[in-house]
Length: 171
Ligand SMILES: [Ca+2]
Image 1 (spheres, rainbow, N blue to C red):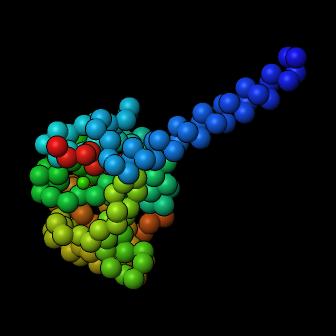
Image 2 (image 1 turned 90 degrees about the vertical axis):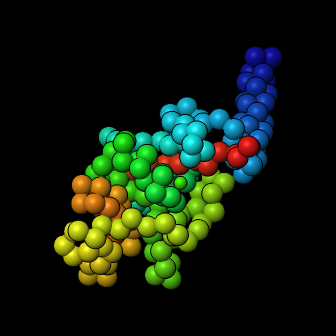
């Protein structure tokens, strides 16, 4: 009796987890109302932000971690959003900006956010050389380095902190 009840409860657990994942994915694609735990809500920007200020990873790992949270690697789409980010952290973190395909810059997709072109930009113009410079043809990912007055393109395998974002459902 006891031996038989173990597989049954395991089966129920698997079913429950699958339903949970399915409903989470559906909810995510409709954009959630509230931020998941660990994310900070910004009402004006209607987005949730997860700041990883300790762990340093490659752009690829940061992208995967954000996607595993149902989020996308940060897309900075307005000056207002950039101003908010400046109040949080000023040096060295990955954004979702990259030109890994077709050598055209775009924001990386993830969660319910779809890949989109860069409209607003905040490239560092006071660095030497001005950014982006695609140094040695190997800099395909965008990081924020506000101490040098803006964004810089960087080798995607470099280890940096990162920020994940989830766009909330608008009212
Ligand atoms: Ca954004």
